[in-house]
Image (cartoon, rainbow, N blue to C red; front, side, top):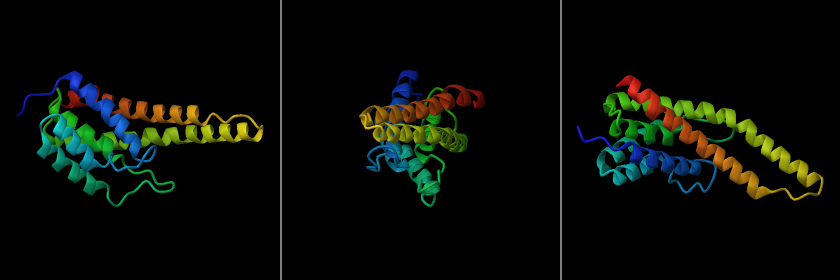
Length: 171
């Protein structure tokens, strides 16, 4: 088994994934949030490219037929990939056979959190509509930044919870 990566490196990776995850539907959609890309990137960062790409491809296959279109909110494969990799490489060092289903659990948990965030985003839109209706400045930038920050914070919270609480509990 390879040496575990440090807690500091794990924290930096969680921040990176929290930003990359915005690409799923929030900002950009440049496909950098795809599981195979996230797996490869994390693998390159931690000198574990082959397991990163391999697991990224597996999670890519899990998520290919379930797209976030319309009202459908699938398992978050980006979070699932990152959680599985970081749980197997970080201080919990779960075996991959356990890290994969726990990663899927993280992706499912993120889906639940995002389901709760969606009504808040609708409120942002309603507030902008009201301001426009009154002839006021809609403050698009502030609303968008707030929504992006909430999404990134939710991703950070889910990944952190799985790395700090779930991983060590299962080890």
